[in-house]
Length: 345
Ligand code: ATP
Ligand code: SF4
Image 1 (cartoon, rainbow, N blue to C red):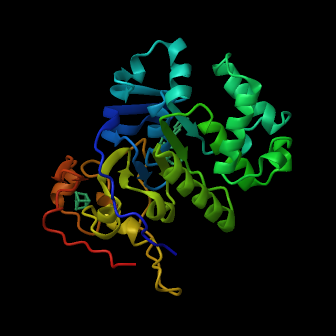
Image 2: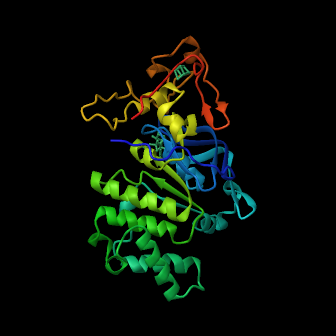
Image 3: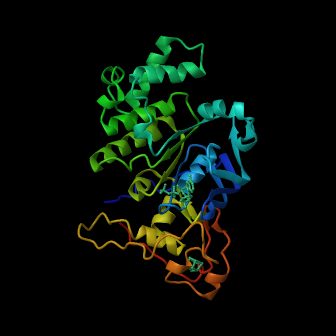
């Protein structure tokens, strides 16, 4: 069930991150996998941006690249990622290695896909939180840490008295996920990146994490970047949505455009996979075909083998990105002559 809650109401357009022509590759026995292919994207201060797409489209790699932590055998092969923070412009790819860790903690934090297993099993939650703050700020008192930690735990709707003395195994999956979110917020980052924050959870827990995330958005006014294939989460929280296919941005726009007036056949197909609010028995439309082999991409538009609107030109030439309006970008040869409409939900 899905309900579009935000209507792309973002009014600020001061970038906090500018990604320019970013390329990330993995060297594998099957050849070079271009997981991110020349992505340019601005993330605006205070917005909630969703990066969506099928598995393997390069979403997580883009998120990891934003922190310059792409693991081997991956490497950033080109482009820049500039943070505009505190009046400074910092390309994180140019920062000396020893400064990167501090820069990340202070400015940008990430809740990883595997967050549920990333708490230290032998430390109580209080010790993990205290150690995290203390290792970055030697001057902070224990009382100050305690106050801050309690505030954050309330924000993620956990009872500090119960949680702080617990070991991770004594908490449910949903509670551990909330602790991870609170941990990511400990050093007041300006940007929070969340990679599939609800995927490993059951439906009820997903719903409660969604409420927590809405609360954070409302209370902290942070810049948040979600990496997910959960479109119902996007409908509830996104200001803007970036759609990735085969390592490229194929469409970018405010949440209303992307959900109701997509201009790219892939976005259109993706939106048709979302159930309507009004119908329980409604037929869903899986996207035909499978995602491309990233080690052996087809020529032309990478979606052409699955696209019902493909023409000869589509299999020959990869479409370039075009701004339809100052806020809506699409990469499709036929965006002018196709009329794609998703019914209101
Ligand atoms: P998912 O939702 O499944 O995480 P994704 O859209 O986040 O998918 P990525 O995980 O970024 O996509 O992967 C993009 C491409 O890079 C895929 O083809 C994937 O197989 C490849 N890839 C990712 N990590 C590695 C790695 N460590 N070694 C080799 N190839 C990798
Ligand atoms: Fe389909 Fe062609 Fe557009 Fe690609 S460029 S999405 S194949 S119509």
